[in-house]
Amino acid sequence: MQTKIEKIDASSALAIKNIEPQNDEALKFLSFRERLSLANISHPKKKQEWATARMAVYDALNELQVPYPGFFKDKHGKSQSMNGQGNISLTHTMGYAAAIYHRDLPVGIDMDLVREKILKIGTRFLDSSELDFLAKDPLHYTLAWSAKESIFKCQGKRGVSFRDNILLEPFDQNATLIKAKIRGTDYADHHYFVKARIFENVVLTYTIW
Ligand SMILES: CC(C)(COP(=O)(O)OP(=O)(O)OC[C@H]1O[C@@H](n2cnc3c(N)ncnc32)[C@H](O)[C@@H]1OP(=O)(O)O)[C@@H](O)C(=O)NCCC(=O)NCCS
Image 1: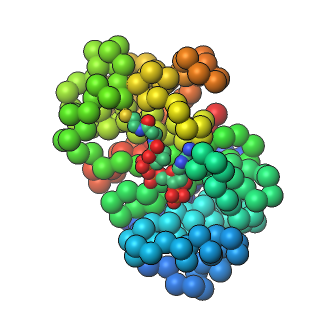
Image 2: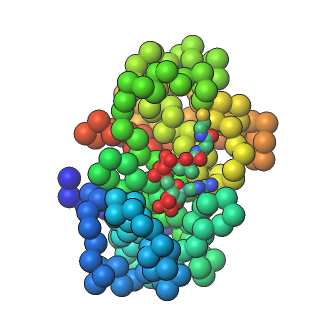
């Protein structure tokens, strides 16, 4: 797949890229702090994931003609803009990295490879009402998992339980929109609308607050 850059609306964009080695020239937009973070990653595969995800952020910003401000990780691990403007979220899986940017609102994005083994951990991340409507099918479970990851990243706070704090409304395997709400924690009753798509056995979801 070629790099895919999408303008979602006037305030937001996303980019999906193949993970590949990035040369110094292609990464010269990174801040000094980000270069240090990259230099501290020793595993070559992790280095490529990290760098490609930042290239995806750069592409998404570029689509909206927003200059790259540099990002740092807060105490929860969520990336925050160095100039306090805009919100991003990142994901990487099995050869792909993706990022979403919004000028004003928190965002969350996630990609996951569809694998059989997710069926074994259903009770760890799904509420009984979700187990009732989901087919025992790896794609359906992965959509549910990924939607919860996107919501988790949009919230950005450690300590949010997938099973107890994020509740999905029933959806089917062809759904492109998954509705959900938070319960029993900060922002309880906030409703999320998660966009979903599938390509090459990978589920991609994202949500904008
Ligand atoms: C941290 C976590 C969100 C990463 O997700 P993942 O699917 O393993 O990996 P992804 O590639 O999709 O996402 C990684 C990115 O998430 C981002 N991230 C990490 N912590 C984050 C947080 N608290 N909020 C938002 N984004 C976060 C980082 O940018 C990271 O990319 P980077 O390392 O290149 O900077 C995830 O592992 C996690 O902790 N999930 C919630 C915990 C949980 O309850 N899990 C199991 C329930 S049974």
